[in-house]
Image 1 (cartoon, rainbow, N blue to C red):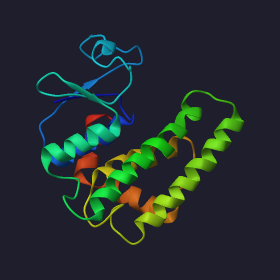
Image 2: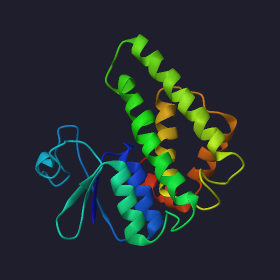
Image 3: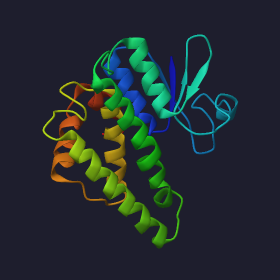
Image 4: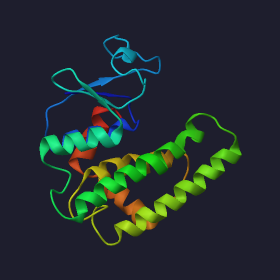
Length: 194
């Protein structure tokens, strides 16, 4: 498999999941000009033009974080509980982050007016409060084992630093603990994010 990524972008969630899963993968970075590191046109691989994109061994390409994360979990048999409500809570949290948080970062990365940024800050802060409540006293977002939701949550929290958003004490502690996981450390190092 080949993960097309941009360093520090949301594709980091998939990168962490690939490391954590133990599945073999190759990395291929893309530039803002939509070129791969080996000079191919990224739009010919993913016409949507953004990361992540996961090229499977048969040449098929998957896009969208929730889909790629779920694929990695299904393929590896890891990162997603097989039975119990924890499976559905993990999928629910992943979808929530994709729909309610990830898109709310757009005003900060696309130079929107300050009023739009403030509206987005409030929406993200509310979403973080809900995730904080969901986590409760658990080690990870939905239980005692890491899931795809944690891979995505790590990136969502990392992106909050870029916009100066204050995290709750529990989410800050969780984020700091996640940075120490071998899979997270490796993914950060492979993307030169130190």
